[in-house]
Image (tube, rainbow, N blue to C red; front, side):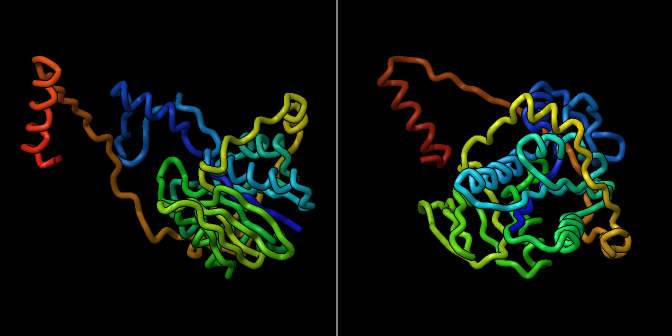
Length: 265
């Protein structure tokens, strides 16, 4: 049995937010990319939780090979983190991420999964913390003709089925699908574990398998973007604060009247 986790390298969202709050987040002359080079890059948090979901299945006694794949310019450090957590197969698809869109990433990842001999279960984060689109897992499911189950807070394997507890606005929902299937993991799964120091040292010596799109039978036309980023900008954040003076009861009445006048109440 093989479980594949697809991961993406992103800018540290906390660092990006700190730059934005301080007014130091800047877009380059191309109008598309950030100029900050000091912002660290790391594994997308939701994807790390997808690895955690796989590790919990292993903890429960499931016997499988855990493969972690990523498409990017230099995901080796991130993949070594996956190895320290327990991944047995690491694959880095060498591409320029700025030149691709979501459907291109999905084609690359799906092609790699097929090249590996398929997967019984594909786990992905529910979305990436940089673009928040969350469409790549569904496109992978379409490419591989697999059912897709989204926003999982728990995953279990039973016979040849995957049983998923989904997070919905109306409460938890339990669904099942025949394997192979694609499941996206939500943050409600809980905090991912940290690798041990010994595992991190051992993972330093592990080299991921590096592949090119041509190795997957994909031409530049096959992964040409259909959606193009034309502009990105940092909005101006303005704060207006008005203090209401008076006694407590008077301030409460004044606040209610103000909220009514602004059509908030």
